[in-house]
Length: 339
Image (cartoon, rainbow, N blue to C red; front, side, top):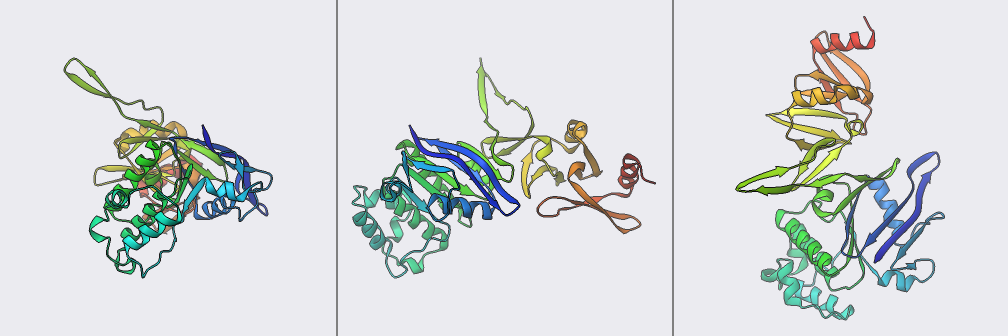
């Protein structure tokens, strides 16, 4: 059953397109993450809570639209914003009792204390907790609610390892309970770790990030891993994320590890730089340094620092600077037809 339905949603600021019209649905038991910039995420959140017009688009939660019935619309969803506040003078137990009462929840406080790893701190006031523990209190607040859809903004940003584990356990519980979950984040690793499906939302629209989970095949006594590499594979935890060559800005090798860089984020790959150079050369990639391969389509400037020192500046958001060796400078000039 469809829980969230987004239709024809788009935002333009003057001549700038934040994102063109897109459609998205989230069903029961489904966890979706949208990876985007902070600006895009803020606009999308404002649309979801009715503080910004959908400009001819539509957002439905269990069939209810904000414009038709605000009360029913919000009764079907729960939000956790990154900068959410708490009553600092209350203890954790006071908070939990308060949340349980106002939501008329039948959830067990003891079970939620256990799920959020806060059993030993239940008598401590919020102001004396770490920022990660405060985030767990906020996770707990949502568990006392019972909507169809849960929306999290940057749930794992700046938290400790224990809190990340807690969040993953909570997500697993919500999925088991038949809920829909939407995670909005600017961290690709977090998105891939948490969600069943990850999308990138930017000026090019909503694009699905292709992922594959490792599968094991057992034949007799021999166990082999079967992984289908259709593109350039990188690995995050137990998931493989595949990038089209044009998406890649550059690749760096450091201390024996190759990392693929896409929009400022690094993704580790098991392939060597030599293997990647051979594989990517037909797509316009250039080995500009013994430790770097660059997508020449992303190069904006070639800078000469000294007679023997050069850099390539990319046309990405971070204006990344990539070293260019003297020997490769001569090769690049030949490729470009320069003397």
